[in-house]
Length: 304
Image (cartoon, rainbow, N blue to C red):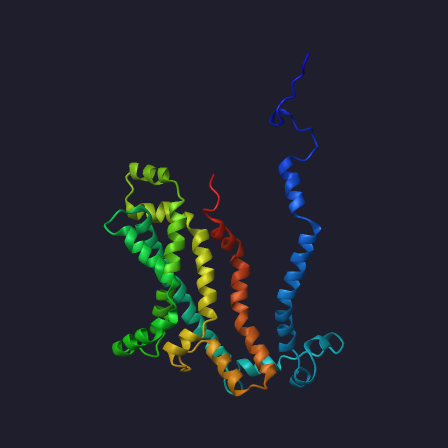
């Protein structure tokens, strides 16, 4: 008499025993992987920590000793930040800091607004040449922005917009639109079509579907691109120098830091404080919105 063994799927898992998925996950998350992640995180954060410590050290201490000597000779001062932010006796980064905010916020909102509308049209509206036009927009992502600087600058000068905020807003919006449309289009295509069909059966048109159905679902994708665009615009120097002309009235903080580095190459106490002031806003934005950033990047990668 022969006995048959039940298939593996039919064998019940005893109470208290981990499942096969849990065992596999435990093997993948080994202590060595965790240790490597910690080491990489420490090495990545160490320069920023050294910059923070140097920004609070006296000028003589910065020029004569390394930042790590702070632990044996702790001396702190706020004179570096006063000199950097004071417009009369120092570098005056305060005004440039405001300029960066004035440049960055519209440069994020304009492409987000236009790209959301365009992505909806490409995803859920049928019109002649839709696929070809979307392919052209996708291909624009590989065009280097350097080749467009002189033609755009010529157009701005002819239109009388040179050395104004409009030139920087329009330029950053133009450069960010292809990626924004592509990202939001892919996110919208993952929305079940039955959801839109149900809205149409209830009498909703394109405007109602866009604002009441899709827009609430787009928050992770909007946040992901918003963070990308914010960091790109805030840290930009090339576009600001090209279209703002280096003028103090519209120049961002990156231009002020470049001038500070060029004219005061030995003023490390001012450079360290100014650099940390410039990175404070993007780091804060990223930390506050990182959960939306991760959700936006993972959106559409897993179905179900």
